[in-house]
Length: 238
Image (cartoon, rainbow, N blue to C red; front, top):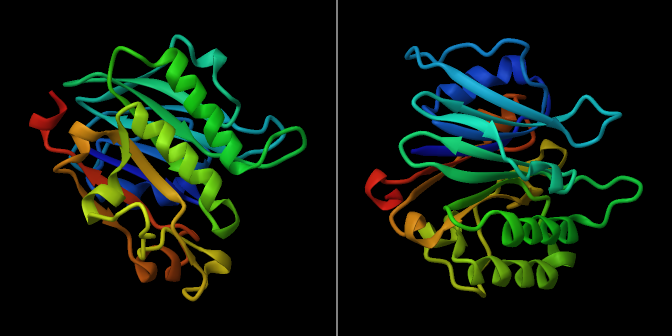
């Protein structure tokens, strides 16, 4: 299974094709607007998708899409989830729960990392019994939130969930990623690693992770983020 997360920075009608060209099976797309009708993939696979307005007064949506033989359905307990998440059940060869995450600060919400912490609360309470993936634009960590974020990472590890990028690169707890996923003001000299795919450690142990390059995804004007693409061997999901 190829699973991706990407903040498309709007323009989803034109950006969707670029994402499908990666051969994704399941994807979380932040800051998007779901199309009225989903197209088929370049190789003819049917796409299903769900969307959620993180803010009711904004056009910006959190979108989850899946390409056959995978499909998505709303999670039975999705109504209990924080506003900045979209929990779904991914159906297909190996069913699992996917919690799409896009923390956004506005009046009445906590800061980014506490929002992530609330998403973990939901996972602990409602997502037991089958594999869980947490993915999206976390907007964290940044320098000021490293200690807070480390505590959330520990909570996830206690649930058997790990950051696939860190695992694939063999990073220790003291090492920070050097591959950026977001470039502030679209400038290459302002890089941050804030987009993540967290999944069961058994899935992540042999997963390969590709981070999009600046020129293709940012320099071209598509977005200020690059996609994170995780390829999980089928045998490790069973």
